[in-house]
Structures are given as structure tokens and as C-alpha cells.
Length: 174
Image 1 (cartoon, helix red, strand yellow):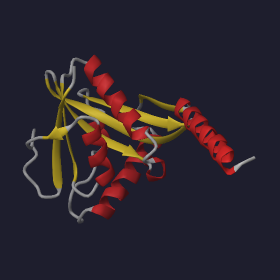
Image 2 (tube, one colour):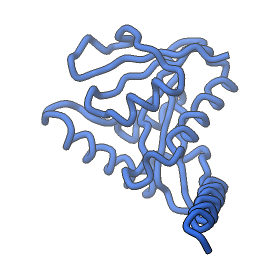
Image 3 (tube, rainbow, N blue to C red):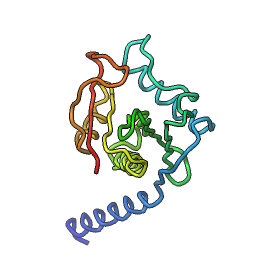
């Protein structure tokens, strides 16, 4: 077989493999107190601690995630927990996206977009028309994802204050 034919077969095989992997990637409501959720939240906290100075509160505690105003979603690949995300209703029609996390080895494959899409869809179903979020300046993959997903820079919101390490985003959803 020629090199061109080999490359074409390999590309088609890679594309098929990506489609199959997407089919086994599931985002669903989760329990933030579960062992799997706690493990992911610990990973997120370690990741953030490595990026930002000590003394900054990185993640939310499980009790905060169990509040009635919070919807927590877990992502799994082939049945194994690999990511999570949440949103918190701040006021009627407005919610804050929180705790977007995907294991680093899976980034850049479209899974983060699926998690964010699930958050947006769930929020829309709950009557939300405006999403807000804050993320760290050094989380380049997250910044790029949010911008590709239609989020635009916005002002600080809720109890947040301007901070050189934080980027604020907002998005209107239909």
C-alpha cells in the first residue's frame, strides 16, 4: 500500500476511534459527596495549587456543592470518572459556572466542550439565560475553551473583587 493510502486509512481509523470514544463519554448529574467526585475535586485543587500561590482558596467544599442552588455534573469515559462541572443559580435567570475540570491527559479532545455544553443545556432548562464564570489567568486551556464557546470578558460579579490572577467571563444563552 502506498504512503498516501496508508495515511488515509490511518486518518479514517483515527477519526472513527475519536467518534467511538465520544460515544462512551457521558456527562450526567452527580453527587459531589461521592468518592469519585471527591477524588476529582482533590485533583482540581492540586492542579490549581500548582498554578497559583498558596493561601488562595482554590475550590469549593462538598457542602457548598450540595446547596440547592447548585447543579453538579460528573463526566465519565468508559464508565470511569474523568471530569466534572457545576453551576450555581445566583439570581433568577443568572448562574455561575463552577468547577469545570477534566483530567489533563484528556484535554484537547473535545471533552471539555461536551462538559460545558451539558452545563449550558442544564442551566437553560432551569431557566437561566445568562452564565457568568471566573477562572485563573494561568489556565490557558480553560481560557481558550470559554472564548471558543462564546464567553466574553465581563466584570467581577457576586462577591468577587478585581484580581490580577482572575479573568471574568459572561455569556447570554437563548
